[in-house]
Each structure stands twice: as C-alpha cells, then as structure tokens.
Length: 101
Image 1 (cartoon, rainbow, N blue to C red):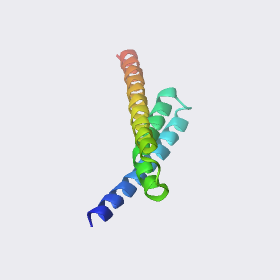
Image 2 (cartoon, rainbow, N blue to C red):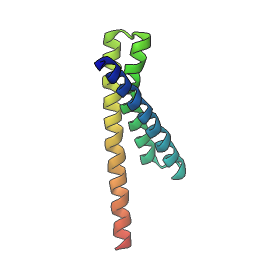
Image 3 (cartoon, rainbow, N blue to C red):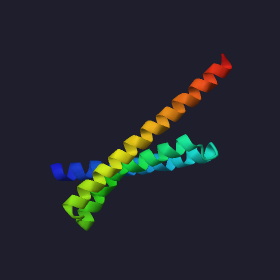
Image 4 (tube, rainbow, N blue to C red):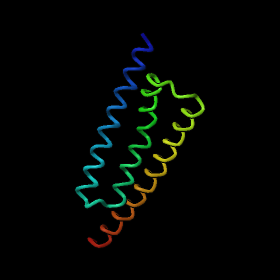
C-alpha cells in the first residue's frame, strides 16, 4: 500500500515537473528567449530530473552509483540555474522599479 502511494506521488510529481518545463519554455518564448527565463527552464528540468529518474529506475534498473550521481547532478544543476535566474529576475525588476520612480 505504501509503495503504491509512494509510486503514485512520484509519478504525479513527475507530471507536474513536466508541466513546469512546458510553461517555463512557453514563458521563455513569450519573452523572446530572455536568458533568465531559459535558466528557469533549466532549473525545472534539473530539479524534475530527480523525479523522472525515480520513474526510469523502476523500469530500467539504472546501476546505483550512476543513479545517485545523476540525481545529485540534476539537483545541483537545477539549484544553480534557479539561483542565477532568480538573481537575473531580481536585477531586472530592480532596474524597472528605478526607471519608474
């Protein structure tokens, strides 16, 4: 029972990360591929990789050392991209606020 609920949650969160990737890509398209939005897209992919690899691991049985390395790389790439994108958005918003005032 717990395994079924856990698997269901992993699959559901994987789908939600897919939705996040889709909409961050669309946002990047709407802003003429602004570089900070692309980093939000990379963050969604990197952080979503954690869940997608869990699903793949069920079917493909990725060797444990490679699986763990890929999980950590996805988290690091996602966190770094999210940090850079947030910084870029912050500086852009600050410049806009200064121009408006």
